[in-house]
Amino acid sequence: MRWLHKQGSPSTFAVKLSRDGGSTFPVLSASAPTSTPTVGNYNWTVTDNGQPYPQDSVLRVGSNDDPTASDDSVTFQIDDSGFITVHRPNASDTLIEDVPPVPFRFRWSHNLGYRSRVRIELSRDGGTSYTTLVSSWYNNWINWGEYVWTPSGTCEVIGEGCRVKVVWLGDETVYGIGGLFKISGP
Image: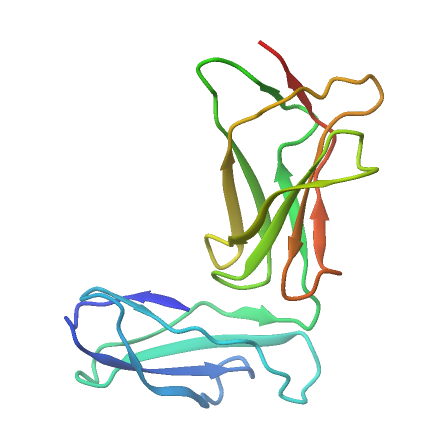
């Protein structure tokens, strides 16, 4: 979880999570420290609270130094099944292996949380086999991730092509595979 604040450093915040749409707010941390004078972070792994999923949830963060400095997130859902959906590259993309190099952004959405780790793989045979591009990469945002890659090698076989696979390291049965795309030489 990440939030912006104007409390300076050092300061601490109470972090609370409602799983009943905002009716009650049990404490996750009574004193989460800030990471900078304007940004707070708190790492939390979703735990099973014994209630049915999905759960309408609201996060509440409040300064321990100033009771008026508090805010609630928008309502979001906690679900017991993870997902990754690869959006780029897709079938409309042709990446170019060129000099000078032209970087390309792989992008995906997920529900795994901020800074959850994934592995990024590339197939050059339409998805039959994959090689690892990056063995461990943080998801950049709470619900999406991206990785900038400089294309190398080609992948232009008719009827086949390249695919990107993003695998959650927390549970490798959770992954997303993008559509076929091409990598062309200079």
